Structures are given as C-alpha cells and as structure tokens.
Amino acid sequence: MVEKRFTNGYQRAVLNMGEIITRSARPADLDILLTFEQGIITAERPFDPTLKEGEIHYYDLGLMITAPDVEVIVAELDGELVGSGYARIMIPKSYLKHSRYCYLGFMYTKPEHRGKGVNNKVLEALKAWALSQDIRELRLEVYHQNQPALKAYEKAGFKGHLLEMRLGLN
Image 1 (cartoon, one colour):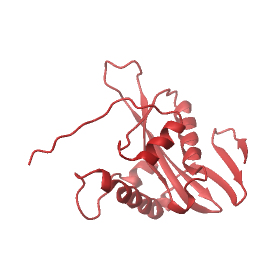
Image 2: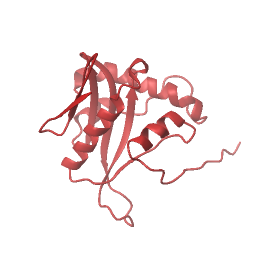
Image 3: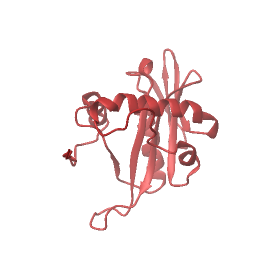
Image 4: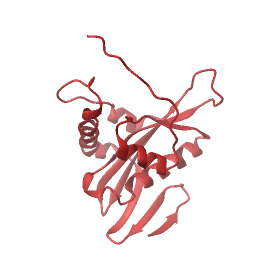
C-alpha cells in the first residue's frame, strides 16, 4: 500500500484493486448514506434490546451534510461509496478539561469491503477535520459486546473510558 497526504489533510490509499478516496459527503450521496444507516442499525440490533422494531433512523443525514459543525466523510473505492463516518463538534460538561470535542458516529463499511482499511481512512479524514477545527479530543460510543468494532477502534488508538449501564424495569 502506498499513501499520499494532500494539503487538505485527507489521505488516499492506493491498493491493488484501486484507490480508497475520502471526501466530504454531498447531498447527492444521501440515498446511499441512508442505506449505510440501515446497515448500521441492522448490525447493532442484536446488541440493543431497546431499539424499536421496523425501520428507524439514528441521524438526520440531509441536515448533517450541510451543517457547519458536522463533517460527514465518505470513502470511495473505484467510484463506489463503500464507507462513511461523521464528526460533530460538541460542548462538553463544564467540569472537563477540554472546551470542545468531536463526537464520532455513522462509522460504516460495506461488508464486502471490510478489512481493506476503509474505516481507517475515514477515521484519518475525521481526525484531520477535527484538527483543522482546533479540536484535540475525539469520542465515540460502541456496544461493549461488539468485539469487532471494539478491536477496530482500539487498533486506531481509542481506549475504553466509561461504560454506560442500563436496567429495564418491566
């Protein structure tokens, strides 16, 4: 694999099958991004008994694509959208050291492209955007039973921080 760094901070990875290119999402990407969202929900349903049945939505992707405090990144491989993620600028609780942080979400790679470095390229692009906004703290949530996701985020440098617990009262 050969990497090239561009002035906007985003990276391209040249692979045998083509290039993984990361870029900002555009309104024209919305239909594909909505299918990615459903892929995320399908993958997370086994970990979350509190999700409603039927089609649900986690995000207002149309609004997020144009929002100034959100960067939605897509990954392309040979002209096909194969992955996504977003960073949203957040204001932390007043007792924390940092004045702003980026919350990451919408991390998705099409199943047939997993293991090719797509998620890493999306994460690198989101990190570059956060740094361009003078933000030095990234946070995300992952289901503790989702071992493949946990391993991927740990490999990218994330560390466990806080475990949210729940008790359903029937």
